[in-house]
Length: 377
Image (tube, one colour):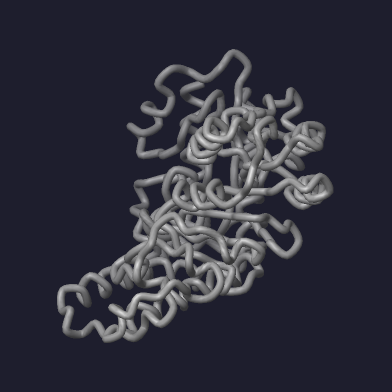
């Protein structure tokens, strides 16, 4: 169990922030690193050509450690949708084959696949929400020889319902199907090992559970796709781009591994230091320990909320960092706004009151949340 880390964040005691699934606050160390980056851009004579590469490689390596991959398997992207578009461009699919996704899945992991289906004649198959919220069994039952791609999260963004990606990935591979993951709502708080799950592509944005900046993300690309087609063509990911004097000697080859998929201007001198500071802190805490600590926090809140009719998914069916609370008859209108007026920050997604804490939440926060809910329900 990790003790409360509120001292590492700049969160007033008057704020009870249970909304990491919406956007995380920055660590003080990450904010300081970003300020230093802005200062460096203000003095461009201090930026050397090598600086376009060093921080990117540091961040790439740190992210690779987080998911048990090689740095050569990691691309730097501006968003989850950008990475998913790369996946859609590089996975072949035939007319009549199926693209599998979840009911009420986050739209960034839907739109690119609906477009691909229009272009190729493939079919979108949406797994309906199972009555028992056991998404793993529902997905496994839907996989057949017609499925070419499964585009999935690690947990559902509305209520934290968990998917066993190792089991799902194994069945997909038995049919020759591909697994594409958007783990923006889990990575950094829920352990993930690509060596065990074996996704074809995995993407995450940094601004939620990665505790990083907006407009920056990372993508894992399985080695078999390293020779694929990037989404854009920029100078930085080409072979030999470290030699600025020779940039006009145009080349067809790319930097090794997944670097060919890097976004243009990946060497963002303000955002990259923020991501590095956040990654270093996540690795220092340990994602498994983060998950266990948050699981304890959400379980305690859930037990208190049961007293006034708010019920979560069973513990074995939800990710520990997510708490989706539902009530028979639904939630009161304007509940979010009512709590906001008391400086209590949550989200409502679908029929769920979504409580997503992090290590900055203390017992006083939990007391304020549950006391307010008891008054307003």
